[in-house]
Length: 286
Length: 280
Image (cartoon, rainbow over the protein chains, first blue to last red):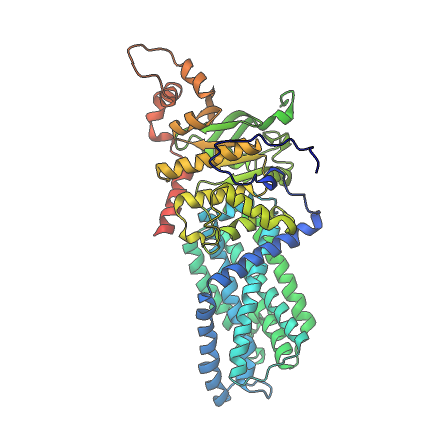
């Protein structure tokens, strides 16, 4: 209708006749500040889901280990009845511990991933976008959470197939997802913090190997705190994995748990992890 | 400290920029003024301080306030505002190989707050602008080096930056891919009028594609002007039948120091090692 925009000159022999990329001439509007951080976290989670959609190999291979734990360790110790579980079958007692363990193994990998992204230039490019470091780290932490939740679903299905009496109450399952996300956020930030200190993949892989098993065995994932010697009990008290397992047991099995304290500790641990990993992220950028 | 009369006409301004890594002074009192709308080439051998200067301008390195400005905004004070003006393509080929080309660009649309309503269209236009529309839904892992570089251009362009910064954009590419990358840069710049700051050590590329070049050596600009001006400055030493090239100019201004390996930047070495260890 209107003649206002000057008609583009008729170009005769233009080799690239594609429509003008008009959107590329104007910068996008600036989102209000309070909506930026959630948007960044969302962007990182979307990327994680896209990657999983393209390549599900990791999902399958990572299901093997928890399946073996439940099938071999769980079934055997259920028969031995050596571990006091408060009246529930040992396999049921173990299942939440294995969910927490497999989520932690995924999260611990994020430090290695961020070093890989630094080496490949991907991280550098993201650091030049209007994304505060804390938002970037939080995004990665929640992306680890998303991946862990998917992994947790796999373990829950395996456990259900083995006859573990789990809850199907949707509210409780939502609580399970929240616990898994918070725990993974902490462990991924722990890993990214160490990455910011050691700076190379090889060192981090060694440290990752060295801490995951002690974190696992030094928690209530396999046995109740009550049967631990005093020193291990002390470690278990400061180990966020114990709080994660306690909450998962309470939610999935309906046994007595300290849900408020568990959520509080996990949220605090995740927050501290985000702060420390963000503070050290700059070291990876230099 | 006083910026030029019209700060909007200056895309990048560096005033006495100094940056050291330990004992090595990578950038040593750099004075730089890139005009809005030009293609400015920062030239120099490995270790001249080009990448360090770029990292200071892109807010990656902590520099004191007052040293670096992008369109009048101080890099130290208005970090986020500066980043919104920038499109950045680093030296390494850095696409996420676990995603498709389109998803790689969409990530950058998201982190630059492109509204959902126009995201898909904007991403498509960015891919179209770098000739990747047909390959957009293939995994980036299947891309050639030249395609990855063009994909990175699309990632940088999706937010319509006012300043495009390219660090050695054609390093490691074959001649045809190099031309492909430069043609896209030239087209986009003609269409949008954005400022382009590029580092390179390929003198022929600088000669062909840059409006002005700054020859950098040991942390400072040693000569500045259009490629033609610089070549004209070269004292006629007679006898040579061939007209001087930018390389001759460079040898003239950097002098014999250019031949010494002392200037090798340890950061370059470190990056090469990293790359080597990644590749295996």
